[in-house]
Amino acid sequence: MAARAATEFEIAIVGGGIAGLACGIALKKLGRSVIVFDKVKEMKDAGSGMSVIGHSLIILEALGVDMRNIGLKQTDVSLRRHNDTLAFRVPLQSDAELVGRFGSVQYNVHRGELQQSLMSAFLACGGDLRTGSRYVSHADNGDYVTFTLDNGAKHTCRLLIGADGAHSRVRHVMHPGHKLRYSGFSCWRGITSSIPKSTIEKHNHRMLKTIIHQLNDDVSFTSGYTTHNRCFWVLDVKYPQGLYLPGPAGKAYVASRMGLLSKDFKTIVEVTPGDNVLQTDVFDSNPFRCHRNGRVVLIGDAAHPVVHHFGQGACLAIEDAVRLVQCLHEHGKSSSWLSSHHVAASLASHDSWLARLRAWTLMYISRWCGDMYMSNGAWRNCLLEVCLAWPMNLLFAGLMRILLFWAQRGLRQFADKVLARS
Image (cartoon, rainbow, N blue to C red; front, side):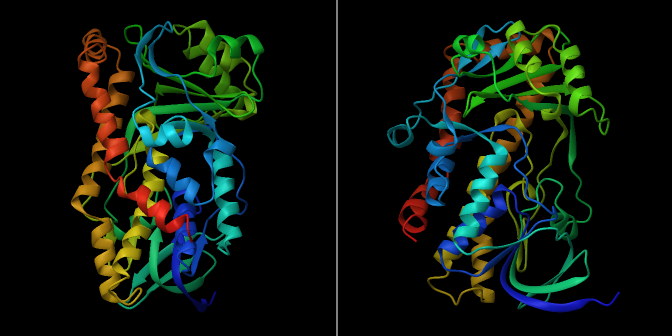
């Protein structure tokens, strides 16, 4: 079949997930021409729950997505033992600015509803979203990039942004030898349609993660509430890669693996419709040398896939997307927009060693947390107990404050002073 004629775009984004849409909205707010391609034919309201923490609250508000409208403010987040006793309460007053504006540093939201809100905001500001368009390859010709879709269509753009997730095809073309690392864990996720009033009253909309378990019980349970009294949950299990049990069969398997966990946790799973249960294998990546090449750049999970045990994957993707736009904006003041010099300076700034250090530090912390939570030997449990007891827990809280609320703080000013006023 003959290739279709090329269409020219200013900026093209591969991937219509959270990172791609956030980047697209920010670019549109600066008055730039941008198109987003996604391989799915229909952007469905799918997924389970997730947390939005730190800078991302301010960024999303500037992009037109107010978490106070679609999310649930968190007032009780804790790390717990298998029998539901408290190991560590997460400090939710760690940032005075966020507490003053949002009442907390963390909100929970249905992932699909967040993505739908971002899509609506992108379309409302004139964004062009092409679904059912699977990216195949690209070639950087110096002044522009030619990329090909699976329907044979060829397009050109002056900047190509890979925001196509952990299993990024753009990254594969840039780094053919790079491979993801299977964590050894698979996770089952679910969200309730409703939950008994007695359970809500007992839990009081708390969010929790079990980290200390019976010896050799290689599971970890997470649950939290979002709007409309829905409760989402995740069960991580040491599990062979590629063996899938979603839906009702997955729910039955989850129930069989929760024998040593608190009865209150089992109640949440029991009231979850079987069709709401999803399963995904959990991957991350060892650091690789470069997130950019010429006029092509990776953002979000395409650049630094992380496991979810520290809860920062989506927030890191949002921040990464908007920081790229911030770099383009700042370097565009002294260079012609998307000239070779402008692109090179912007992408180098975005791919700075400090930004990479923060991203990969969060990746390694998430990996370490997963390994510790899921390998419940006697010495590991003892180490966790010591780390989460006073005064050692002050170090943990301080590290969280630095990584989540102090580092990259300039994104807040960019969001408030530039994006929110555009």
